[in-house]
Amino acid sequence: MTITEKSRNTVDFGRRQLVVRVGGCSARASWRALAVVVALLAGAVVFAVLAIGIGKYTVSPSDVLGVLMGTNTSFDRVVVLEWRMPRMLMALLIGAALGVSGAIFQALTRNALGSPDIIGINSGAYTGALVVIAGIGGGYYAVATGALVGGLVTAVAVYALSYRNGLAGYRLIVVGIAVSAVLNSVNQWIVIKLDYHVAITAAVWQQGTLNGLTWSQVWPMTLCLFVVGAILVVMGPQLPVLQMGDDAAGALGVRPDRARLGYLVAGVGLVAVACAAAGPVSFVALAAPQLARRLTASPGVALVPAAAMGAVLLLVSDIVAQQAFPGTELPVGAVTVSLGGAYLIYLLVTQARQR
Amino acid sequence: MTNEGDTTLTTRSDSRLRAEHLSIGYDDKSVIADLSVDVLDGRITAIVGPNACGKSTLLRGLARLLKPSGGQVILDGNDINGMHTKEVARRLGLLPQTSIAPEGISVADLVSRGRFPHQKVLRQWSTDDDAAVAYAMRATAVTELAGRLVDELSGGQRQRVWVAVVLAQQTPLVLLDEPTTFLDIAHQVELLDLFAKLNREDNRTVVAVLHDLNHACRYADQIIAMKSGHIVAQGDPSDVITEELVEAVYGLKCQIIDDPQTGTPLVVPRASPHVTARR
Image (cartoon, rainbow over all chains, first blue to last red):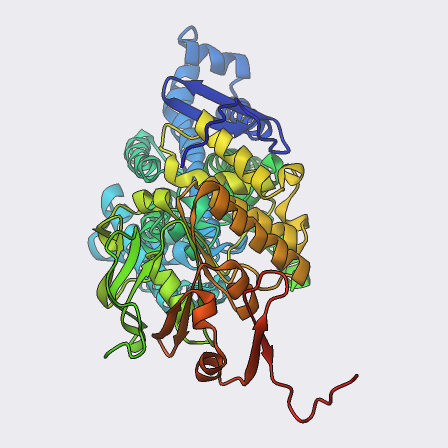
């Protein structure tokens, strides 16, 4: 069946759309979503310069820019490039990873509460990481693998426990919260059993912290994110179609079970990669996709805005964590948990009202 | 098992879509066993039968949403389960019984998702996509609603939007799973008229699971009557819908009269003794 009428953009989407067509390639996005993403990226740059500058040894924004341009060769150079740059980059990367992961899980569960930190994936990844630390010590890839396995096992367990004639988002969330509680006590138990010095590190890490991250963690993190990002690009935009229900998705040419499995692995992978570097940072995955969705007014959660929002959220949270109490550095997880607690109560209340 | 009463088992192999010895079940419970049927090209076929007779299961099997435990569904000469799923989606569209509109989605955005099987990673919004979506919204009379949120629409409007999603898919075959459920009678007729128009004007093949026998008789060229996972009768409504068949399939005593508008069979249930004639 072909439509003979060939008109250019005739469809009214209710919002102004940018359509780009070059050769056989084409893309469409709402101007508002584009503007939000650009603004978030600009915000990330501004906060990044700020984050590099602040601390016991203060570097002014112009000096920071000078170092980045190569014109400032004083001691600032060491502070900026060696001390603070890796931490700032990790905040952005981990934030983006968590944002995307949250968007994936919220889309799969079709519920704003269905993020990996609520349904136990974070806790499971942390359990996996702890087991590796207790068993064979450390190493980024070993811990990341442990976190990935722990996260996947948890995801499969939550999935299986909540599966009954199909997957209901709400049941999955309740089961996930229960599994999460069990895993948290397992984690506590492992920490208690650990060697004293390891236990101290593990306990700080349990909150999620960016302290002490160096370039040696930035590269593997970047590589892992690149791999997961490539998988998501290759999978194409199946997520929006999957959100229409399994029958509609199947009719439109998506294999729901296969697509869900792919997204599940990608989502857990992102959580695991972040967890191996900074511990189970909560709240970012929960809030970033929803905040981005409200700002962009896009239908359902979208991956790119969630990534940008997650990056900015974690970076700002880390600045707050370092600056809130002069003299002591909080783990960034403490900041995100406090903010997240308030947001979670708001979500629970609004969802309960809708029922 | 055999299909007792299945009158037209002889295979018309020129049908674009057909089932051959199809068996489908959930878990270990068999719903359909050894069922063969040809969908008439360019015609409207209605699948009717009592609740839980397997009519929706058959439709979902034909749309490759359920994997058969035996036999196969043939689309254009190929086993549908061996075909690339996007390729199937370019030839065969389905209006499911239940679909979910993502929160905050506009009508045009939702209809655009019907273009998924035609899109690629680097080709997300071609002029064809635009034309197909514009056409689909015009055909279902939702162009005026394009910018509105789906959440804000009435039940009848929303169902038209879901039909537009299927039309945007531009498939020569359209399967409909109880499309008129939850609609008031005016919207039911409006929607069925739309399907008749799509069939007559665009020569699309339509297969619909319908609850209302009178609708099935009025709109369908072919009726497939099912009971307990078998086809009891199939053919032209005037031949198939008889008082005996309705009683055999539904256990309902009725009188068949001519539809005064179309001359097709009209099923009038017999009045029970509790209902007195008021004249």
